[in-house]
Image 1 (cartoon, rainbow, N blue to C red):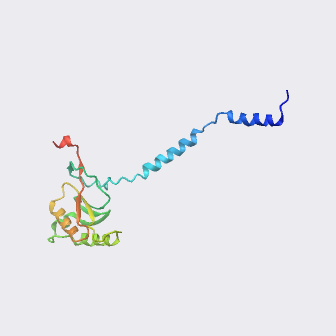
Image 2: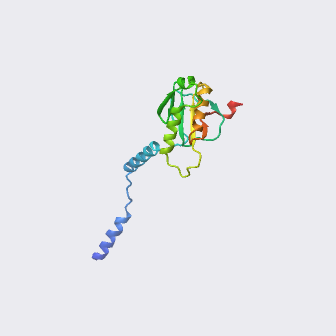
Image 3: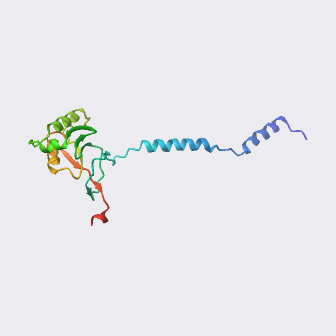
Length: 166
């Protein structure tokens, strides 16, 4: 029996849709690999502190995670603000003044450059001090911060497990 042209066309049309679609996983894996690498590289972890091999932070059972703020790193040799060396730790320790003028100037400059919604609001600064840095140096830096808009001072520490501290 001979089929009409319409019946042949309908059979051909239905035959196309009965085949199982093949899925090419190679290109899909490439896309997911690129996406994974992108997410790993661009992971903004606010809890990550600047990495300086000269500084060994003291240990604490602090529960609060650090936030994104201006950082002062105090190593046994240098004082660094956001990657820029400001002064020598030894020179700050030996000076007679109770504040460090270079720190005050740098913090005032950074405060003038920063975008702030409320100018009356206190700005926060985090001090990453090596555990062997003398307290005299840290005290002079804290006093210097109080003469600038950065009056909220916090310290970075390494978190230890509570079982170890007891």
